[in-house]
Length: 144
Image (tube, rainbow, N blue to C red; front, side):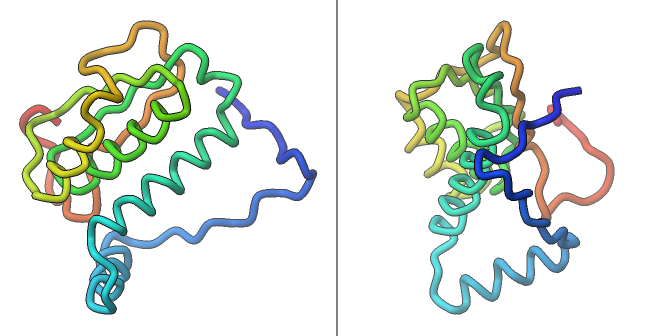
């Protein structure tokens, strides 16, 4: 198992709150109701995830990153991560478990076009799971 390096400044990473699916959905709904567009929330989530990946897993990124995306908005977050990592000059391949079902996920896939490749990436040591999000319920089905 890979153990991420300590931060360069020697200060431990702050704890990250873990929310339930309901709490996360409520936080998203509150942000949207307050005027933050859902596409902006996806950009923020993808950017934050990208920063953590770059910070904690940089030694493994030279061989590329494989991202597996689902058809919902969590998949949209994955498309953002893929685009942002590719813009850093990394090889990124995305595998889709179905076509995007939301306009937001479709938009993020469109924004990533030209930056990433489709299908598996041989040798990738970093895999990002963007299959299921807070809207998931029941057992996984279909391509997932």
